[in-house]
Image (tube, rainbow, N blue to C red; front, side):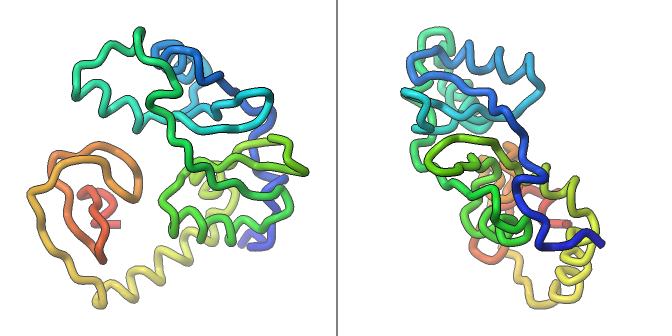
Length: 179
């Protein structure tokens, strides 16, 4: 099993691919596609001011908005939760679970030095993930499911689903419900 004190600096992706708030959502999507990533840190004067992710595109498409005419600053999430390169991966994993933010900028002395995603943690610490999965199975009898006809983004994985289920006061897709 990987040491749960493995620091963020050993797993984070650096350098970070960024975009400015004045670029179009279309350019953000093309940049993400070209680089095979699910989000961009939005920077202004070399400082992070937001993040734009795949989730942000869903609402635009549903509203039939033209991504070539909408600026990143109008759809980006402005509430950034950052982590230090010295923090332990499992502490950051808990933060991701608590906040639902799956992509976190890594800041060192007020400078953007990397990005860490939930996927990065899963790849770096598969032993911890398996242990947590087993613990979840043990505790599953304590989980109550409330079916709901609600559609939208899963609060665990972020994917859009036509049928979300409420599990412990959050809405999740069928895949996350089974996990």
